[in-house]
Length: 262
Image (cartoon, rainbow, N blue to C red; front, top):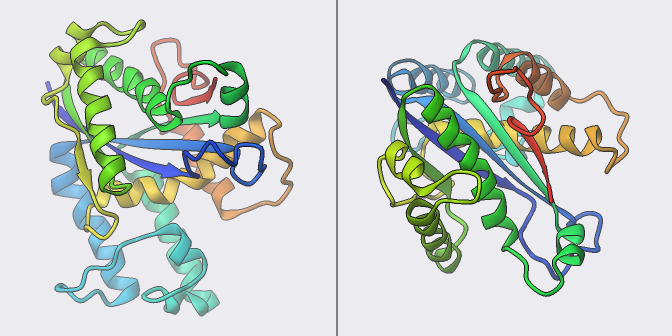
């Protein structure tokens, strides 16, 4: 029996007022599941070593890997303006993504369809995605006879409080697909852990690196966007498909490791 944690990152925003805008139509949550002992003994030290090697990390000023700043080579990632250093860094990250032991769940919601389909009552899109993701996480823990907890990136004080309340309801009441007894049996706490992006948490940084490529892949899979570029994110997604997306007993990814709502 092992202890796991799922680290969850948001891509897009939950604002329903601009759901008709193609640039704001889709919200995604990506969760990375890591076994706690492995996280402490192997994953965190290896990720810290990468950051120290490429960005000369000050131990009192930890570098936080954030995809947007990395892509734009903003401080402290200005070393990536050198093409050779950038290539070495990219290959090192891809090697780690292949080697590290973790599982991924990405849930994407089309907010426009969600709004139009549920015109009288609709579930908050972030909370809806979270509930669907955590159903799969609880089942992952159940079938492996393991336990775990949940950490998300902070979204602001008011949003965080609402999210904590939503999580407690899931824990206490369960869902139509996963009864409350299973949530309470497999989750170690009814309290959602919320941490800022500026906190040096390896699992949240891994989720941040994976989240955008995984969201893009689901949109491409379902022909919701057209993009024929061959990107670095495609290399990440090939690794995810080969062995990191969550699968259940029959081996299927769609609906489990990758899920489109509603």
